[in-house]
Image (tube, rainbow, N blue to C red; front, side, top):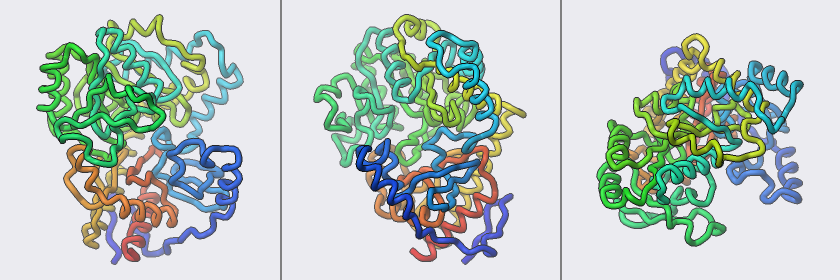
Length: 446
């Protein structure tokens, strides 16, 4: 059964067969060789799902492996590639900076230009600082929050990911229901973390206003900050319920606790001003990364001036505000801001066509999956359930999702095996056609 695409897409799927990728000989050999010198054969545990796949090159929305296989890439570098692979405008800016210098250990003009662009775009930002990774930005942001308030504890939500620094790498993906639904136990994610790493973390269920209200009513005097992903993009893409983020804002203000938005994923994808602009809720502090540098390793944290002034004398880092990465930031923000954010609107429109097209396929074939989320980043999950918090994620069928991921990958479509699909300004209708054709073929042969 061949289904029409969402409005605006080109339905030419019937004229081209879906190709099954069978040869990854060179990728297998390269990974096998790499295991001799790299623990696990890859540089990040995240990449182990893609065995055996070794990239050769990429451009726009497409990636080619060293066996010559072509993929529609919905990984987008795990998030950074908001402009697609190797965007010319960013490459030209970075190359120009390389010829001027790659690292100074003193300030350069780009630092002021990039920070001004961020302050102009993101509602909560009055002062910022740059780092190299999202984990660093989270760590330094929470350190500033603790210094400002004089309190040690941080509230985080079960299932939210804020990097791999010990004191927040807690209750990200507990394999079981840890504790009562309204009062989860804090669970270390790695055996290498100290046993006492959970002492300063309070874990709460997300989308539960009463749980946060009850906790801060009795413990606000201990709590420096409440940190949250505005959308639960590291676990099933769960959206905040209507009014939930506003309620968090009201409660934290009432109890004089800082509100911190982890916008490492949502920044510059949901809107140029991030989720805080998209949802109309302004936190005290936020962290930004991934799309900030369009593929270059840079992150930022910032917020209210009175809080961030603490960072002036306490925030260090050899590669902070690296000029090559700053050149990428300036070029990326200029490109995303051009023509009243036309490129970002395009990304949302294409993503919505793909999400809606997948849902029409799932529905027409009575296939037990759903696509949900926003246009620029959404999730496919199985079975189609109402998802409100992390406990609901435990009811998902991971084996079905992993099978779907593997089958789609064999048909030249890359995305995160938990179902996360990320769009870029480089994606278009032809990519939508290709992905939907692959999905229809998978469903038909399931």
